[in-house]
Amino acid sequence: MTDLVLHLKKQWFDKIKSGEKIEEYRETTEYWQRSIQLKHFTNIVLLRGYPSTRTPENCMVFPWNGYVIKRIGSWERQEMIEVFAMPLKQEPHP
Image 1 (cartoon, one colour):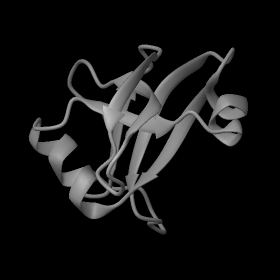
Image 2 (tube, helix red, strand yellow):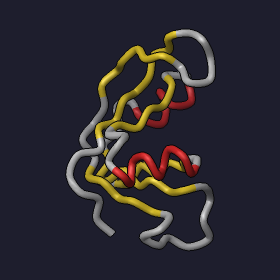
Image 3 (cartoon, helix red, strand yellow):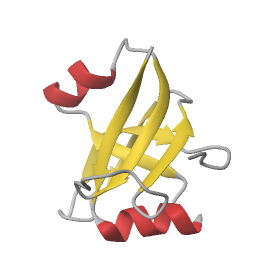
Image 4 (cartoon, helix red, strand yellow):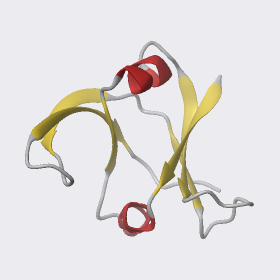
């Protein structure tokens, strides 16, 4: 199996690292449907931006716990959107 690698903005990466944010979201667009649905991953790898090397400061690895489809309020738009909500359970490992 393979890892799902997601690049995050600093603000969201830091919220996950602090434990304030416990799920990662991706809108249910055609791209993310092809990338996530019906696939099995070992881990979900979260990177702060596009780092040249993976260090504990810019990389977190969580075991893959699947996803659920949810409707949430978009922080960019004033509307509800459908997303893949991927739980980030357990402590990240290096």
